[in-house]
Image (cartoon, rainbow, N blue to C red; front, side, top):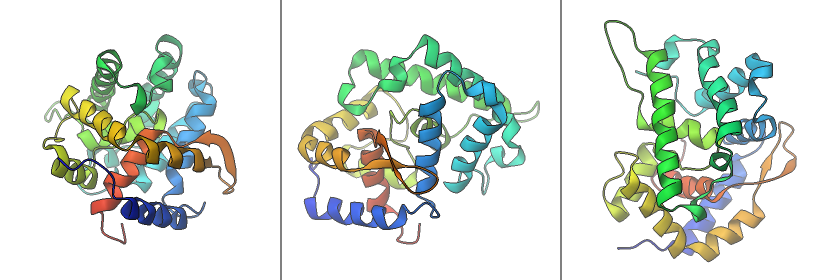
Length: 232
């Protein structure tokens, strides 16, 4: 099972990423969202409008409000309960905010799955109505977790294609999939940690901050870029 990164491919991916991460380009939307939630965790509801807008903007930029998405029928204000939930996790479950792929084990993986389900339940109430009960997609839930916590890659179409080719599965977010992400990290530990040292989150003006990309984001970036069309 080929789970070791092709060094030339990861360098190509990072080069493309750096070119596209200018503050006016789409890739930077992740940085703005992640930076905001990290800097305001535990106090997000104190500026509810700004918190909702940051998350909404990130989701819109990454395609979560287009096509058949039922979330597109709502406004940013629909995310209020989700924002309140994130404030609660910052106080009751701070390890969730600190978690990264290198710390995945049975307990932390269960913590991630519990949070995945909690976010899914909140979103279900937002996008469902009496006639049509709709559970949110794996892409939407994990995209939110990546943008807020940075503790799990986003299971979008391209990421799933990449990791399915290596491990099988990845149509769900369960223990097996998360353990395989950890295996991928272990097999490529040296390269991923070197890249993590080099890549810092940028702010709204394109300036580097004190925050580094988590390993989960680097793995997400690799999984996404390997199969995404060049103009995506």
